[in-house]
Image (cartoon, rainbow, N blue to C red; front, side, top):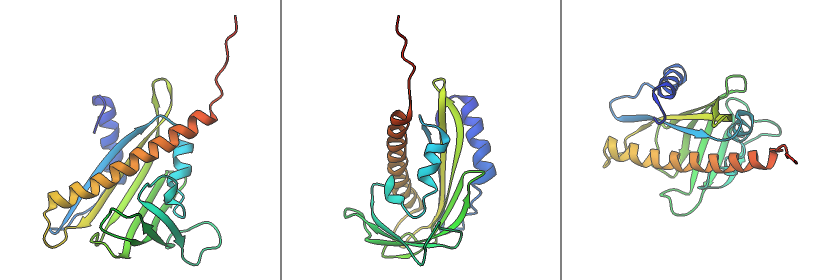
Amino acid sequence: MNGGDASGAVEAQYIRRHHRHQPKENQCASALVKHIKAPVHLVWSLVRRFDQPQKYKPFVSRCVVNGESGEPEIGSVREVNVKSGLPATTSTEMLELLDDEEHILGIKIVGGDHRLKNYSSIMTVHPEVIDGRPGTLVIESFVVDVPDGNTKDETCYFVKALIKCNLKSLADVSERMAVQDRVEPINRF
């Protein structure tokens, strides 16, 4: 976690409340935190789009939600195409939780040509104030099996690197949107 003791306590409280993974012996789990200089409604508008993760996830080239004609709902399944450079080309993912009131998204990987077996993640989005302006605290946690031939540390390192990249991209896109939305008062004297 980053920030001072007060923000660390707030982050820990949110993690205890929403990010309760129960890793088994052959699994690793972790939680990552990102502070974004954009209001929570902008950040959530990107995060909640189960059908369009490519809006901010740089490793996703395409996403198709199976059998959907409208808004994705709990139980919806998406087929994600992964850009080259990663040890995968596809991932099949199910929407486990979508709470627009509490700003919680839960996803479980149910297939694909990768080694992330029994992967489950929870992402929460919380309002905060950053430099006197509306900001957002984003927490993403996960649990995943440790593949044969890898250690817990190696597996956690790999998944955390992917999530950090996604969270940085989410911050970049959200902050760009916030700047475009912002109307600054002009003082003329």
